[in-house]
Amino acid sequence: MSKEINFKGRVINKEASILEAMKLMDQIDHKLLIITDENLFLGLLSAGDIQRAIISDKPLSTPVADIMRSNIRVASPKDSLEDIKVLMLKFRMELCPVLDGEHNILNIYFWEELFEEEKPHPKSYFDLPVVVMAGGFGTRMKPLTNVLPKPLIPVGDTTILEQIFKRFYKHGSSRFYLSVNYKADLIEYYIKNQNLPYQISYFKEEKPMGTAGSMSLLKGKINETFFVSNCDIIVDQDYSEILDYHRSHKNEITIVAAMKNYPIPYGTIETTKKGKLVKLSEKPELTFKINSGMYILEPHLLDEIPDDTFFHITHLIEKVKDRDGSIGVFPISEKSWKDIGNLEEYYKTISFP
Image 1 (cartoon, rainbow, N blue to C red):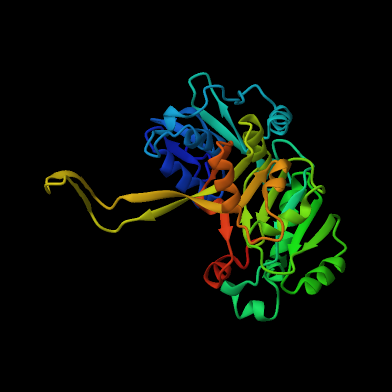
Image 2 (image 1 turned 120 degrees about the vertical axis):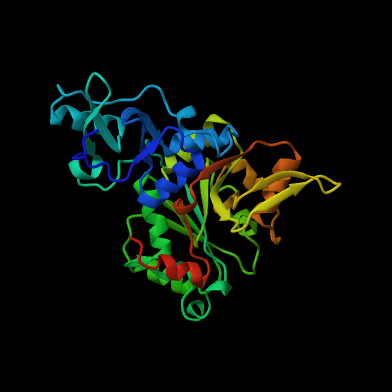
């Protein structure tokens, strides 16, 4: 590969693991990597490829060469720049390599260099209701929430609530249902004066009802698949891909889960019951799927939420699980999820765009 070609840190070797690829995507804030073998182009690895591998229960130690797609769109030296732009627009390609007959990379065109938008458009658009749970007291955000309700805490040049609206609106959704309680009048007053291009309805819990109890007030009002989001999280993901997964697997509930890595700074030891050594691992990493606070639900589940009762969404999930209902888990990378429901995490993300 020519040293003059700018790969923007997006190259990964075929022997690298899925976990290494996820970390690299988070590090460079891009969801597409170039897989190489001894300086030859092998293929591309997307966040979707990784998500499908995790959903299929492949170990995070699996080499990326085992999960990359074989059908890759690339350009040849004969293609004009206009041809390449048409190709990238049609297939939402974050980057397009130009290869010679021996699979050497001659050039790479990046989306942000050819188009005004920083990232490609969503895979598809949808116009579904979005329920935002914005009724909490924001205890973990005190003293800020002594003055402002958590949904109106500033993030960048807007509020966290507007950040959530903006991301769903980008995917085609403009109908929002807000569960409110604490400082509800202030939330409504602020939103009314922003002249936002959304249809916003409020439903108020008169007492704390948990993370799902207030949704009993939506019975008969939502009659189609809908998203649910906590008001203190931001998910950087193509939401249409989550919806495709939900529908293709015929889920009643889909939970969006962030892959959280915890490095252990010591060598760990596994033994038998008699104290014999089984395995010695040097500074391993533990990876867990963390409930991100975003879900997709089918409308009939509203009827399974008891009226006027304290009820968490985890109670609903357990209820569906107990009757063998279909519950799916859609994985996203660690840094694709921002939990700003406590002061420490809020200060880390306060300035993101």
